[in-house]
Length: 100
Image 1 (cartoon, rainbow, N blue to C red):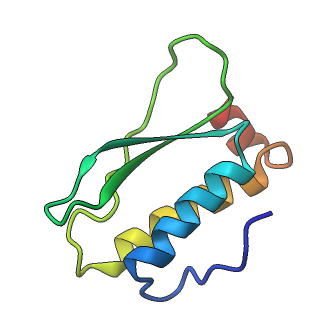
Image 2 (spheres, rainbow, N blue to C red):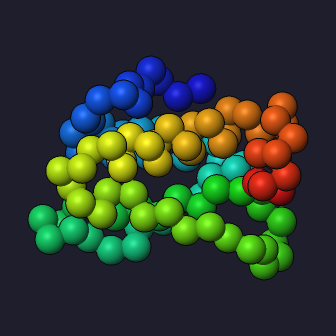
């Protein structure tokens, strides 16, 4: 399980980065993580792909989180959505269908 994370406040870069690594490691069957480049300051930009790994092409939804650094709610929403997606997989029929 992932450590406690507050989805209702601003989290700094280190906290968000730790969360990305933690949630993707804890849910390796549903989340794959890759670095798609670096920020101006040299920080890695992560892409998280969420869904059951089937090896075949599937429709996808792209969510760009953190487009504007000072709009903290976009970061928090996307983190919350990922947490909800993986924590309800298998128990919520709609989320399970989406991720399958």
